Image (tube, rainbow, N blue to C red; front, side, top):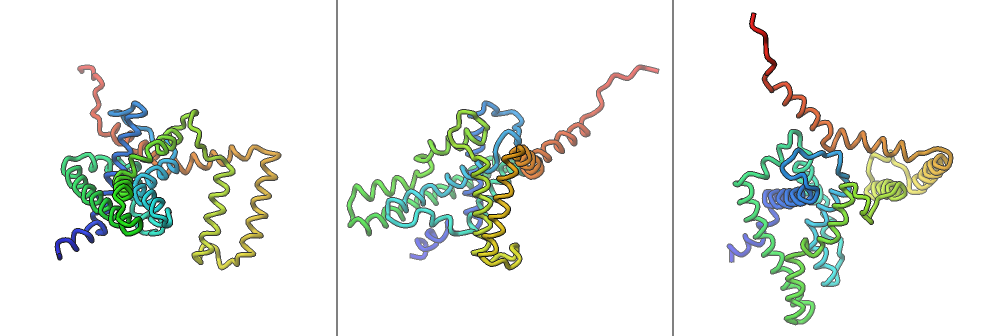
Length: 275
């Protein structure tokens, strides 16, 4: 009984979740590199869109829970309500893709990490299938087909969402054939949603603004931006700001620093004339 209780609580440990999320991010990176034909070569972080990449990673991590909740009639986005868990998965994604000098990716490629992380991921899959079959039996009256379907989907949710992930991967690689594109209007809606979410959580970043004040200020700023976009090409400034942020925080600066230090460490092989 104690061993079964420990096994059920084991996937909730922070070390377990860290290894599991790191393995998922590493598998996603390997798949993207194999799709782009750049496997074995030095990747260029500036060629990938960080937001689409993060969304793909988050979707693949919580795919089993999201699809299982849809079949069980519960809230599908309930797994994303745990902010600390989502933050942990985002940190592991950032370390695997954009860690300075590619240290996270180098550690994730070692044999010891692969064996340990694969073991933890297998335990998580078995526990998730057991949870899905048990819940389906309670809801659908022990119907065997329903239990098989829910258990299979919750155990292999990431595989079932691979077509959606492929669309996001095409988008993060700037593929012109990608049907999913985040336009300026979508980015503006994302920024406004972030402001209202901060207000609901009573964040001190809004300096104590009420909901009416926030709505008025948001309307003034958005209308001013759209009026300016009618006369000037504001998309150019948004693109320039995104490029600078991507270069600073998502691998461009660290890649240039790595090349600089590698150039310094190389010995001087120029031929010197004999005196």
